[in-house]
Length: 200
Image 1: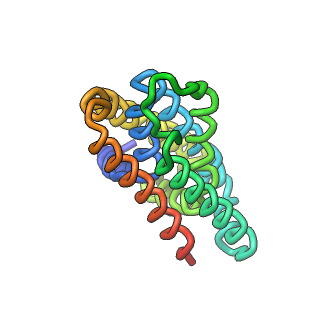
Image 2: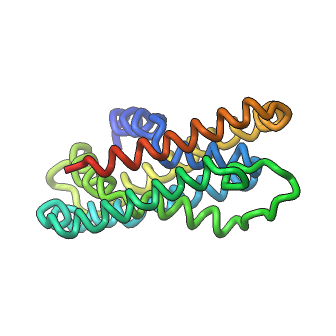
């Protein structure tokens, strides 16, 4: 494992995507403990893509237009659902303490689905991991890199969740700010869904 891999991984992970947005939304709505569940779910959602990249299924997905399109549109539909669920009153970003809380398991599963239903993730691993593995290295080297990437993802996402939980009290006491945050997070998921829909 090289320092280049660690630096590149951190840059990729720090860039806000669906996992970051989801973890921060949960941190705002449910606090730090539940944001950890979101971070764990998003991290575990990387596992199928990493596995596919390691054993070569991502190449099959890349050459099969039908398989790619099916997974892509499932992912698009789920992102649009998340956009609606966050933007609406009483949805995932409802900060009302009297609202029925979502279980940590449901939060983790939702985060996992965000990454499982993203076909670009498996293609990313297919292109990303081999750059840092010598030609003579075996599958164990790829597994080590994938596990490291997942570990870094979890740590960074927990940090994002902690930040969201930290500013939660500020958001709760300002309804106008909350409304703006709800629309912003919903809009971001909608944009990510539209971006995925336009992926060839």
